[in-house]
Length: 143
Image (cartoon, rainbow, N blue to C red):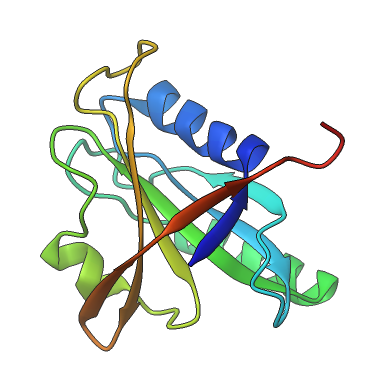
């Protein structure tokens, strides 16, 4: 199960809407071994595509160095789908390389950049096997 703060989920959805019609992508880091997402890190989709996302290799290297220095790891790896449901594509599954991470998908197909419904689902992807998991939204700190 993915337990995530409302503020972090709101930030992911806002990023997905802002980048629509291209896919948005990013990471939510957290303390190593905690399984608690805490630091929202939006990334640029280097592919600049409505059907594919790709982290810029230099940005990704910088992020991993920063997480290492902070004692963090990627708890959530997120991206959006702009015209399809929030389910990992074959390409998404092939590129899933963090077996401990939650893969959060947001579909903006119904509302695009506008307020409205956004489908939000989370998965574990390990060695090509996709397993959907429950998303539990928890109160954000300070609210």
